[in-house]
Length: 630
Image 1 (cartoon, rainbow, N blue to C red):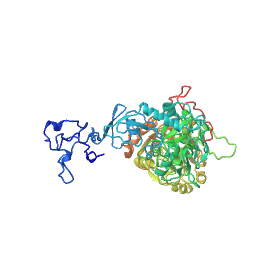
Image 2 (image 1 turned 60 degrees about the vertical axis):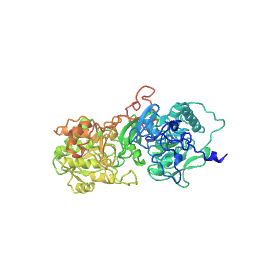
Image 3 (image 1 turned 120 degrees about the horizontal axis):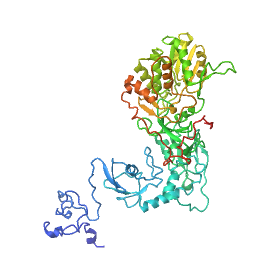
Image 4 (image 1 turned 180 degrees about the vertical axis):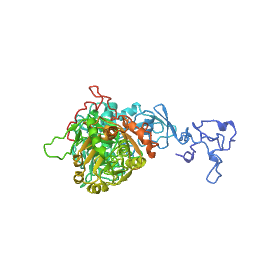
């Protein structure tokens, strides 16, 4: 190659001959850039006139032919405007293609991507076509660009999705019939949508550990794992407890705990939630129920005062598990293991019928079981002689909902004539570094606000025992029987009371001392609100009818009010809120109806609206709870 060839400028097609006047027509003849930059003039001085020692031209020369097009000006300043599958989308800068596609109704499949975790881009099923890229790009990792055109349904994209699914299923065991993830598994759903081809594998699949116990609450099936690394990233980034890692290479790569350690974090069960397949499983829920038999109701966790938003999965009149529900202000997408397992009190040890007489009488003594009306009448007769007396005390539990406490404390003030209330509830526990608080009561803040609004003073539980022993308190009315001390020891103190009317959810030594015991509904069996530790009030919905003869605390308070000559006409928790919440100034801005979450949620990607027999999931039966080992 000659020196002239090597020194030949790349833009000579647009540059006029040396010495030619720039305003002649010849200077304007020739191909022009397809997208000249705004403000550029074709008759500006050529770039060849400026050299290392020359003065730079006032305006840049036109780009050479074949160069990159200029960056387009934003159609919507401050936002990115692009086109996805023929539909225009306007998103914030930095929004990735998966989230942008969701906003216009286009689905881009993914496994490893999670909106609250770092981007790994290792599953490769989200590869799509972009106008500014010669190859397919990962939608999870690529932010939207101005003027970009995205295509998610072209033959090239579909073949890539099919190939990825075939690769992921190459060594995946055919466990769907016994897998707990069946019915809410992305591998199943995406196979039916993007692959649906028989296996071409010749030979045996790679064998790994089928029941690897990672810790006290999580078990791993390594053969089902697709190495999306969601669980590893979650443990590293959210609770910041790196207890999981990826070991091995190729087909023998696997998720495992580090040698000598176990997955014992209080947030370990979140790895089961983020696992898109049936690899990580809850040892508590494993083999208990199929997802298509479960209904999910939006509720609130009562494990501590954090009040995480949850979905309660249930069937018949049994709750099977709690799962976190999105709430940016409280728990985002997570919840602790202790809160998850708090559902068990809803299923066992419940007070199912009313009775009169202490439960610790001589063996063989039959306690009379009453109808609800007879029980309310018996409780009213027991409380009436002491109404207005200082010998009558009231115990309120911060596990009760705002509606229960509004009705119960209003009854205590207006009918029983008390001016102070003793606070019960669960004992203090341990807090952790993330969500779990030391206060194990979901509505302590609500109790404090309601007592303040009604003009009642709150007394610590530690003051109640000395008052009973000293004979200052001879009768006790309890809205909830949870106590922050040893229940058996407190029950011995209660034995000296003349009257003990208790509204209780679960049996305990305390309920055994009740002279009139009234069965109360759990929060999952009614609707209402809790006010968590930061003062945020949340609605929860009713999942299924109350067990046995139980009714909510507010209903018992309403019936006792009527039996004692007062006026109470509330027929629902909503009526209680509308009638009484106005006395609490902190509740003024809370709209009970608008704050209601969706009526019912179903787990899984695309759950069926009903079962094979046509009845909605969860409505198979409403009889006595069956024993399922929960």
